[in-house]
Amino acid sequence: MSCIPVLTTQYKPHPTERMRANQWMGAKSLKIGEVPKPTITAPKDAIVRITHCCICGSDLHMYGGEMDKYMESGDILGHEAIGYVEEVGQGVDGFKAGDRVIILPVIACGECFYCQKEQYSLCDKTNPSKEMDDLYGHRLSGIFGYSHLTGGYPGNQAEYCRVPNADLVLLHCPENLPAKRALGLADVTDTAWHGIELAEVREGDVVGVWGCGPIGLSIQKLAKEIRGAKKVYAVDKDPQRLAIAESLGMIPVDANKVKPDEHILSAEPHGLDRGIEASGFRSTNSVTHKVMRATGLEGDSSDTVSEIIKATRKGGNMALIGDFFFNTNNFPIGMLMEKTITLRGGQLMAQKYYPFLLNLVKEGKYDPSFVFTHTDDFENCPQEYERQFNHEVPGGMKSIMVTPYGRKLNQPL
Image (cartoon, rainbow, N blue to C red; front, side, top):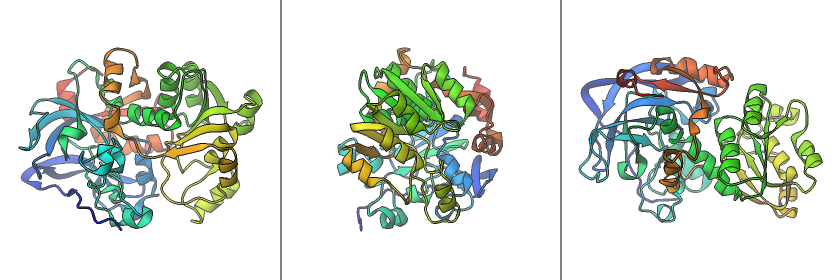
């Protein structure tokens, strides 16, 4: 059992000032509530006034009820946001009031064994969760608005957010960078890049990506445009998202019509060089796994993982970037071992990939804004969760929510 001192996740509420925040009240039950505005709690804290935020696909785990036992009524959700620094603690060196910033989702200390190796999502000091310690044998990093399993930090689907270790968790955001590009750098782009790094995508590779949501499509686009992949197969069940993948130059594979592993192997007998899972534990294809998940006999489905193992060539690489938390059954460990496939996974190590990713966007070499197909007011967060959960977001992708302060500034999207 780990006994390393951890950073406090609590914030000292302002004695009089209030703010609005998107609060979890139960499975598929959210509300925009009024809560105390956070204040500086530790010297390295910053308070950020949010202008724009959005919903991550992983937020839907909390919304859908899979994480209920790690949630408390009133928890503030969200880990993708941009805004302006309002106040900093005396220990913050790199930021000052008035700076425009991107808030990274992973809360790291910068000092522990893992942070020194730039493995920030494995940070030893920012997550006090005994449940995670018991579940995995170790704690991982804290994450904003992502259940008490990752520390219980209040999220940033709110008018203000307290950011611990601000010098490491904030990025300077150019004033002339449109909001969609900036917000796309908060999580989607760096998570996608993490998947590419885990899979070790190289120039000339044949790549398969299971999942055509914002992160899956971003993986595909980055693999082809930045890493030089020769072919990218895009696997999904959603016709609208498959059409987007095809428009980006990918080879669509409709999992409603074909068995993806068999279809890919018929076209690529050698197999994929790199296979990436970006659909997550809620993705089931077989009746067996649907029944096991519905009856509580397993927490995570291995349907897509099994397909990827089969479709990946001998000696190839696999990455898990869609969230998996618990246990699965019928996992093809023999096929994985005998084919000498390297399998890696994990939460994004966001800080590791900057300033590289920010410079890609600033220099016009990559544009992450394509993942946002709808704009709404922050006050409509609960409705946007329902839309995203049911795949009903206009344009088929992701909504960007603008706070009252963001609307007042009227910045270009």
